[in-house]
Amino acid sequence: MKVQVDMAVCQNYGQCVFAAPEIFDLDDAGELVYHQDVDDSARGDVEAAVLACPVQAITIPD
Image (cartoon, rainbow, N blue to C red):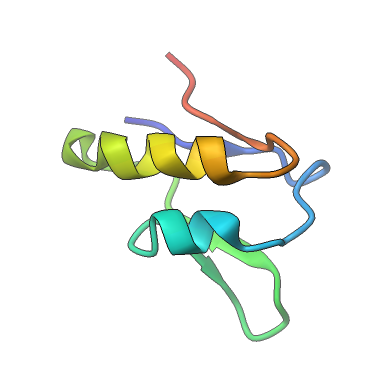
């Protein structure tokens, strides 16, 4: 499964990190880093991160 974050929209609030810490993280500078290719078994966590993002920067392209 692919995960996509629009970094022009992302404000690094980190809500996705709380929802799916195995997929999303904040680096030492506070910038979002994430895995773009994720096992399908993590879909629920990624969907939770999509819903948690206050600026709707995360998508799961089909």
